[in-house]
Structure formats: structure tokens, C-alpha cells
Length: 527
Image (cartoon, rainbow, N blue to C red):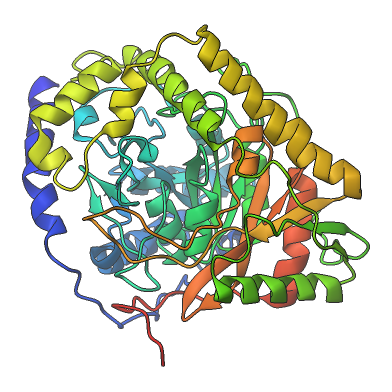
């Protein structure tokens, strides 16, 4: 195992920086792809009729990755066992019938989600190449039990974007820079960059990302996808490379609300290894209703989230008008008065959590791991600065390493402030005051240019923090395009209101049908 680890590490390290220096060669030879924009239901119908098999579907997506991903670098690796798994599922379908809606459906997962198979789990870092995870992440176990085909791992902002204050979203030492398929010189956003791009570019039927603050919602929005950031406690985090047990969650990034509901139904579940998880047992597809906005009380959070980008404001205001046409009662404004007032406290919590949670994760790795602590990771990055830090450093990691234990009074005070301001005085207060079913706001602005010199830019106004810090759910859905760049609108709600939020998002989606697939343009077209 040691020789395999060193071989993989040296090969990836040698190529990572060289790959980055070459701009992609865009191809407009697009979309005669047979499975383009197909849903889980479409694929199941095709397998039921005999038009496709799980194997032929997996082969189609693998060929698609081979053809298209040279431009986007969304996929770090494909599963060498994918076709064998698909064959087994085809045989089972013939003898026993399908297990459920995910039987034979290919899924790409973010590379911070553990798979105890022949694939790597690295969070994009060369420091974790060759390390052995002790078991599948709980959500991977659930996917396998549901009959999904784990097709591969997606690139991400390295360490889920908790390494540097000047990072470029979608860049990792292992995978290089992921690119937005709507304009290849634009950010894919992050940290679930590869998952958002892969879903948008039809590289798999479904993808999964993870979020601490914005890492599902933002790449979903920037890639014209539906993203679900679940309530903390709905989806297990066991086996996922952590940042914060207070804010981390996994969730779907897909092309339609119904597919998000299908996937979330499988991901949600009680896990003894994640004490936050609570029993729910909800079929999220059952409540989808194209008339769900009729009579729904929808509040608009304007302060702090509008006014950064005129074209984003225009798109989201038109989305609100569409909700009104569908019968929603619009309360405008319905401000989250604490927005922006606990950002420093949030960072303080994340720094403490990252040190404690990452140390626990690394200590559980199998023999041969190169790093066992955050201090080891920092030292590895310094020793391999040419491949790990050619563009930005590791300020966040260094700051986290300096923090004390989770019993520190400073940590406990910051955590209490976050919960009070994000929950009690934030979303809870606004929803109670206006008797709301959901709060809406722009998920964020259109994708900014990739900048490896100064790091991520953007027009501001991201609305992901209230639900991230509170641990509450949010769903983003495509709302429109700014010069061809996608913009999403988010529905936010109370804890475990995913069924309500998905239904509201579904009604909006069915009315507007905004999403269109990317064209892999080299840059933004202003024609």
C-alpha cells in the first residue's frame, strides 16, 4: 500500500501545476448526448422499457466525462468498479426488480465523502492521497443500498475552501482549477465546485455536494442547478472530511427539484455515528405540488442581499413576480434584521471546530496516512508548496491551529451568539413576525472571473449565511441568466421544513422552466 500511495502522489503532484497553466480548448461540439437533461424518472422508464440498462447508462456518462471534462475538470476520478456494479444491478433488476428510484442511477460525489473502495478520498489535497478510510460515509452506504452507481469523485475547493483567505473556488492541489461550463473563464463557485459543474454539464444523473456556508447553494446557483442545503441533523456527516459539526451537511446538486427530492429521500436517515441525526422518514417527492405557492406567505429579505448587482436584482424581482402570479402572498420586505451582524462570530466558531473535527477525522484514517493532525497538514503543505500552494497559502489553517479546545469561553460565547442571532433573532423572528412559509433572496450574483492571483471576487449579496449558521434548510432553484451566467433564488425556512421548501421551489420551477444546459463558451458573450 505504501508503494501505491507514493506512486499516486508523485504522479498527481507532478501534473497538477502544469495542467493549471494551460487554458482549456473549448469545444462547441455539444449536445447530441443521448442522456442530456434526463431525469431519474426518465432513466428509470428507459431501463424499464429495455431501451437502456444500468451498464449502458453508466457507459454513456463515462464517455461524456471523457469527452467534456477536459474543459471543466469537474471530475477527479471515475470509479473503476462502476460498470461491474451496474452489471450486478442489471442482473438484480431481472430477478428481483428494482430496489427503488435510484436503482442503476449514476451519482457523482464530492471528494471529501469517504468511499471504502478503489477510489481516493482526499478533499482535493495531496496530503490525503493514498490514505485509507475505515469505511464508507453513511450517505454512501445509503446510496449503495438504494442501488445507485457511485460513478466517481468530483473536484472541489481544496479542504472545502477552509485553507486560505485568498483561495480560488474550485482549485485543489489534486485536481487543478474547475471551470464554469457557462463561461469557462468564470468561477464554478464552491466548495462543491465539481458537483455543481458535473450536474450542469450532464456528467451524471445526480451529484452530491457538502456545505458549511454556501458550498452547495452557491455552486448550484452559479451552474443553473437545484441545490438543497438540509437542516443539520437530517443527513449524516459521518465519513465526510469536516470543517464544523455545527454547520456541515451534505446535500443534492441536481438539474430538477423532483430529482433533488428523490435524492434527499435516500440521503436522509438516522446514523448512530452522527448523534445530531434525527428520525424523519419523509418521502420528499410525495409533497411536490405545482400549486404550492397559491396562498403561501413568502417574505423577501432585501437588506444585505439586494443592491449589489442590478441584473441579479432584476432577475430575482422577476422571480418574485412569478411567485405572485402563482398566488403567493408576498411580504416585501421581510428583513432578517441580524443579517451580517455575526460574521466574525461564525468565523471564530469555524476555526475552533475545524481544528477539533479535522483532528478527529484524521486520527481515524487507516495505516499509511501521511497526516494525522491539522499540524501535520500545515507542515505537509509547506513541504510541498510548489504543488499545494502555488497560488494561495493556508492562513485559515494556521489560524485554526492556534485555537484552543471546544471548552474555551471564547468559543462558547461565539457559538451562543451565532445561535441567538441566526436562529432566535434571525430567521425564527422574521418568520414568526410575518407568519411566513419561506423567506426568499438571491442565492448570490453571477459567477465572477477566475482569479488565481487575488482569489475569489464577486458582487456580494450571498444569502447563504443565515441558514448556514442557524443550521436551517434552504433550496436554491434557477431564476435566470445575466449575460448567459446563471443566477438562482433561494427559499429558506425553519428546521426540517425541507418538504415545504421543495414544494414551493417545485411550483416556481414548473411555472418558469428557467434552466438550460451550458454551451461551454470560452467567455461571457455580450451579444
